[in-house]
Image 1 (spheres, rainbow, N blue to C red):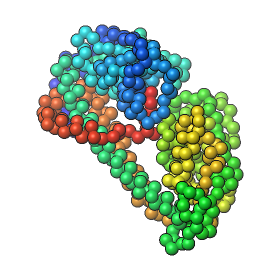
Image 2 (cartoon, rainbow, N blue to C red; image 1 turned 60 degrees about the vertical axis):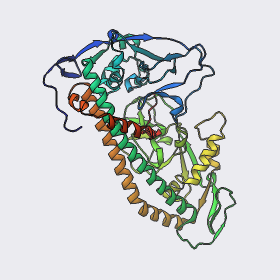
Image 3 (cartoon, one colour; image 1 turned 90 degrees about the horizontal axis):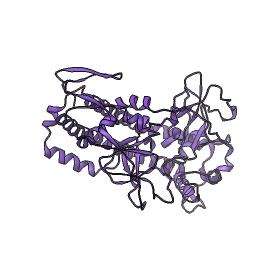
Image 4 (tube, rainbow, N blue to C red; image 1 turned 120 degrees about the vertical axis):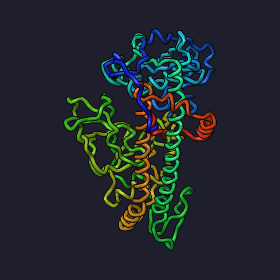
Length: 473
């Protein structure tokens, strides 16, 4: 992958975002390659599909993110294998892909079918149009007042230039990219499994410390809570409402999908506290004339809890704000419990990332009729916590910070490696589909045996992307 040559000769591409393409390549408008398909379901019984920015067109049943379910799918659009499906409202965020399935899609989606001899280019079109280089083209052709409301109309797509290598070269490109992305994705999956194991180990250490303490010989007592079991003598089991001064909640203002600058304010998104880590870049920029309520301004030391998420596993995620580089306010999807003075903030954050806390969250959201993936405030207030004396809280915090430091470093390093692999995959695809590198010889050197082995391994793996990074389009 790292020794790919360039093409022998290039020519001007004629596109503002792409300087040159290999000689022999051309470009045509979308209307010369695709035709618009608008066929509707008569029964509504076909497989339900969705478009994900990470995965392209996939069955809804494979997604962990909860989606709106219609009473009837009669009259919804249909697509077939080889069709390009575009979520017109999220095309600028690469919410599109070539389908491998026959099934139902949203009536708001557009379906384009290759024609005029380009039917065999389907895989190439999937790589090309979902590549980072085409993001500019899709963005500029999407129209609307707000970034979050941009829409790619059929007429705009049909007028869009599509880069086309000769047939033999596009086959080499897709074969090579299928091979390369499987290898990269396999490496990412392996690192994800490592992180999962490390997180499991971390959870076990935290759970034991916040429910049993540090003294293995301490005398225990019945907690009075069936699912909790015994706790050390001298510890109390208290509901959250008795250990907080108040619980703040933010608002849902109109905001832009950009990061704020140092002179502007932003509202946090629900994903800002996924998996117990505060990510301050998970926000949306507010208009400069927006009036800021000082009661919902985020400060260092705040404890934040996610009220709602597209993924049930992320509801109730809690983290402490350790540092701030932006001016932020709470959103309506974020709770901020303000604890009484006898509660060590770091201890309670560990407790709110423990197994016994997750048990309560799962019970609360599964029993909240009509509020799927939503944590009711009344339920949160009723959650039970094991509270040791203040001095013991401090000792537990000191112990956990010390023993978890190496685990956290390894997890962070592995996540960084995953980010680099993703970045490399993105750049590789962009360079290959635009002819910056020549993969014809590399593709010809791939053996069928190697390809079969990679496909077999990929079939045994779970999805690469965790729910918190999956931007469903």
